[in-house]
Image (cartoon, rainbow over all chains, first blue to last red; front, side):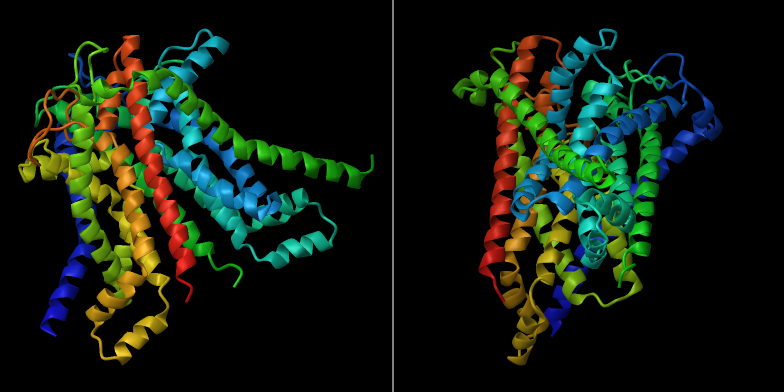
Length: 290
Length: 285
């Protein structure tokens, strides 16, 4: 009996490691950020339009990094959203079962390729290609990184949306067919509205994934924080900035060192809010049809 | 054309558009991979695999990178497998419906959504500095183990869920204790699903770059590590290093190293899918 208790205790401890991880993340981000905000006011952090902590004349405005992050993310979503949802509709409403069975794992490959490889694609294939169309585009730019990131997150959108469409009871589909609708009408007028919560969740999670993506933007989007929505010039994202500082030789306990935690907590807040909106929608609308 | 014909035409058109969208991602990926093989394949030879890094592109090799990756994978595996499977067993077999267990569940889905670079910041403060591990293989493995822990836990739970209740009931009826039931009956029956999850988790760890850069993994390591406390580099970081160089010769090196990284990733994912299918077929309750 005693052995059983010990084992249960060990198992429980393993489960608690996940809680410890979250506590650790919060502790590390908060403690270093608080130290950071003792020297830089939150007001300056949010309103200053420049981010130059590594220069002699220091500015600590996070907005250029946020702008870079959102820019690449929006480009990625505008690639992944139409393609991903079309794939989901095609696979659930049009495709043969056998085709679906082969294609689904193949699409997952897109998400399994290491991101450093995508960064290489963006820099050596996509950017030169874009340069041949738009000669004014820089060697590092948000467009190329965003497009490649979009390709990477296609399966996030398509597979969750497809699950949502499959979960819609087939009576709805048959009802629509019985009224004489085509597959396309059924898809857009019946299935997509019925599965809308799941589809929205898939997009939110893809969004969150894109915001936190690091290597593609660190390699292909540049290292120049700038407050712009122009996709043709070099920018810097929050994640790329953290990489840039980590590669350099920054003194521990210095203000430069703490900037990566201030940037990190900004990133964490973004993804945390998005993930929880996603969970909330999923939970609230899950059992609509039962 | 009347209305119904127009609608049918639209329906047909969307059919082709759907096929187009489904294939375009894969075609682009195939094109990327093709161009990488074209660039890098001729660079791969015995010397490339067994040479130390060098300032001269044609002399540089990836010995330290792949040896470092193997060290990292082994230690990540040693840490994450017992931890993840135990946590999965606890949540699926032991935990009663309580506030704590639902908190743990919500927390795990949240952790799965935390960007990998944040895990790097966590480890930089906790493992590297507080625990004094430095930028060692052990610190790197702990980082990656925490990062992929949710994958192993979720896979373990799914696999345990798939074991029918009658198996457990039969085991109890024969007088087995709870742990005996889990260890002798439930775990072996869910082995395939757990294994799939572990392989996918390790495959993810092999390709991770960002958190290791944050904890201070080195871009240039002139020796192969000989203990878990040594400094290290891994394949993705070596690739990143070569991509960041302006000279074209290093791009070729990066392409060659990517071929190896992709091979490892695809083989692991293929094996995982194979195991999943095999076990699904074999166990027919």
